[in-house]
Image 1 (tube, rainbow, N blue to C red):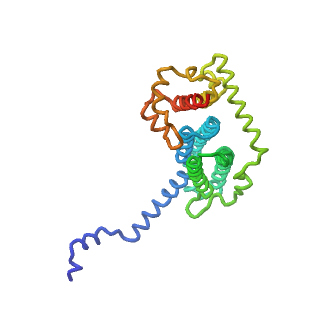
Image 2: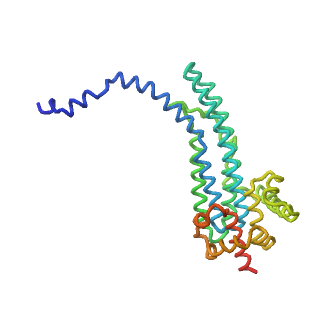
Length: 305
């Protein structure tokens, strides 16, 4: 008798909702959940964050052809930012498509539009993000003292691949919206690009650096070069910083003696294990990652000359 008269159990029984009420709530809430899950599949923030981590990594670690790696990372980051803008517009369209679907049950229209979006994103993502990352990792296979860096890059790449795999499996409840898509035909992922595929882009990248150098020698500053070449200012900074390492540009052509004196003590013992972001944090907003990298390259040049 004590169980039946326990006040806590009686109170719990009062609060317990009847099955039909729970069924009604589920019927209302499930479409909301499925809607949010589908829309969230086109949220690019995770991929953008990973691409930004890669850009920071190319600055933090000492690797072969670091300026080219930084330029490539920026291209990927810019691409992710562009994709995020397109994805946000598609998310707005999805709200309207789902409103119509919930009214008339026309799954074919929803499926068709989602498939077109997934094909666009998958092709762009594979060709402009994953394949360049594969080529970059491939180029470092014979490099020394880069194990920590390549491991970090592979982790970032795995995160990006996981993101795109989720997009390939996008669904509305039990309905897989991408089942008719042949992803391998749209954009095959290259784990190891052939030499013939790699040689031309590398030459073009090298030429791009020297075009920046030539414009700089004509008296143009970074901002003007960036506008003229339709590139991000940080990309131009990366180009010029690379030439500090070779001695083709002197550090004082890029920054004041005072700035160099402030940065130098913090980077004198910089190595693969060092964190560029920690140095940046100590220096504050008046100093860019490019400034720090330029001083590191300056010290590298002095040690070799």
